[in-house]
Length: 112
Image (cartoon, rainbow, N blue to C red):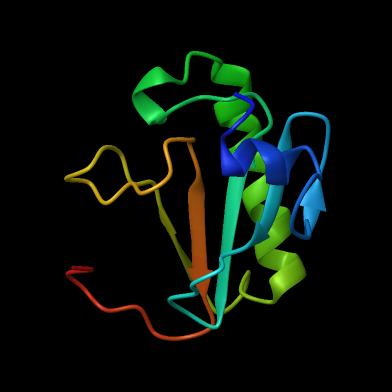
């Protein structure tokens, strides 16, 4: 999607990537909610988790990309939280699937 800000970031048109491979890009959140707050996005535009049909992409994100970014940011041992917001009531503000990886501090529950 040409005007999607996360598509532009994933294509390298704006912002700075901290991770990239053929199918996924990751970057630091512009409004971090924790010392480590990385957004992981598929390069292909998918509006939200309910529209993700590519099981290989989902597996890649959660079994390969998340562990690599956790290690790269130093939260692989201390712990981290993954959040996927979906829809307006779920707190999704950009209609492009993104996984928040948050860490670097003690997470509380409920999250909000």
